Image (cartoon, rainbow, N blue to C red; front, top):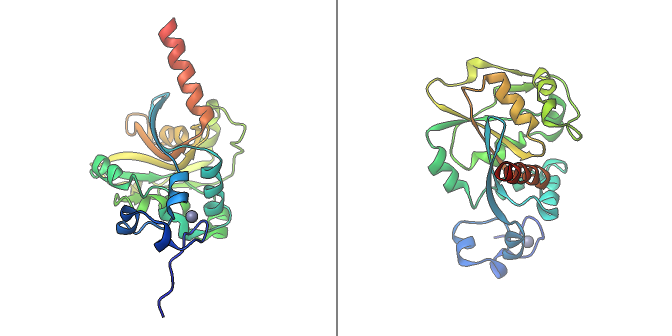
Length: 217
Ligand SMILES: [Zn+2]
């Protein structure tokens, strides 16, 4: 017996609500949920790292991320980057993605690497060469916290392929300190770019303020 496919977020029947494009690309969300996830590609510079995010970090996005990451809803893995995966492939097909680490405890609890699963659909090789050896509280962290975070991670250099451009990936960038710590561990000349699904509004506004400040003075 064929089962009716339902939206992974709100459970409405997909056939009744999806657009033709959503139907063709086999989107796992209904039209309403898809529209609620707003694409907002934005690139900012934090120190020596160019960082691009793809979605608006609003309440809806945050709820989806909690459902996926904290409620361990692995089926949501493809919903976050499905509209931008082709753009990512075209821009980074010659690169290797280096995944931000999760703690062993979080990995064991979740049963899957949430960042790797999000980016797998883009078709770029992903290397899990970073390992977290202790948890650092990043919620209140500033960019200067990256040195402390760098000490809490190790990198396995033997896993990194030679001759490929290296791009760091993470789920969200809240302060950017994890990505900066990863860059610091590898060396600033080796990696200059990072991608995440969304950049926190506070980090975006800090970047805009710095840019305006530079323009004035
Ligand atoms: Zn829905």
